[in-house]
Length: 424
Image 1 (tube, rainbow, N blue to C red):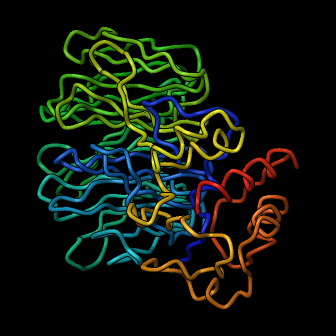
Image 2 (cartoon, helix red, strand yellow; image 1 turned 135 degrees about the vertical axis):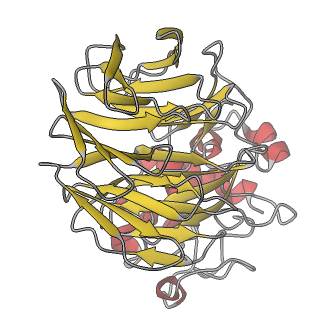
């Protein structure tokens, strides 16, 4: 695991303050979201190769989990605590806390992992991959059951009542794999398929590239369909009580659907960018969405309105006193992950209090990688500006910080001038 003094600061640089209902921290599209059963924490995975563990009541980032080499496409909450991440590198990591390393790593896929599901009895995890297979792995150890038959990337997987596995793929097939190991029942649909969910009564809902949500019984019999939009549906979530389904599309549309009545109950209006991930809170009345704009948004799933506040104001008094400055605007998006005062301490990223004049990787109480500890950089206005000018891969090689830069000299200067005052 590798950390940087500005790991999360890099990820959130924008020109305007963050609206209160948004969680910011990722440096790329938010590909996956999972919420713990108690609703206190959530994990998000991103194309920036990191996962962020969030404390939802405060909206603060508790840790940045870095292990995978490639985009994190799937996350799942583990029963009894912890999360699983699946990524482009074909590996699945099981996290039993805030890191710094996964408690267990599952391997075997020959392509990116696209979806994860945990069995109701918490004994197995199922993974869907672009290697055309599904793997069902015992969490206590042992050989994985490999399900092969799809003719293309497998994009969705879920456990059905009784232990059957349901999968959906780019080959436009929905497959039900019996728990006893028999041959899968195959349903071929008119369009490639993305995510799927299975309710406690066995009903299956699957998202398709033609913008339609299709419903099937436990036996594979089609029960109906609902048109959500004209572009592909790429995200799907089922409320804990099974009453609602949220479906997100390529143009940013999110529909909250009454599953039993087959009608759209609410429409969530976002920025019009792809919505890659959705997750209900345990009460089913709130919904988290992640998208191409790198944000996690919180919604009222009944009315479709934004919820807030989520993002805290780290160093609130300082920010309030300097909020009219350009540098404060650039920094504000990072308040969920970095603090400015010694009393607030470290979050997912280290405190920035006293950053200027400090050697890289020496903030007290923060776990840095060995690569950063070996570097001979002292943070000054010039070195911080240089970091954002040429990017972390060039300036701090070996880091896994999101690769982003600040494009203009004026914004870089505004940031370091403001940080000099705010971090004293």
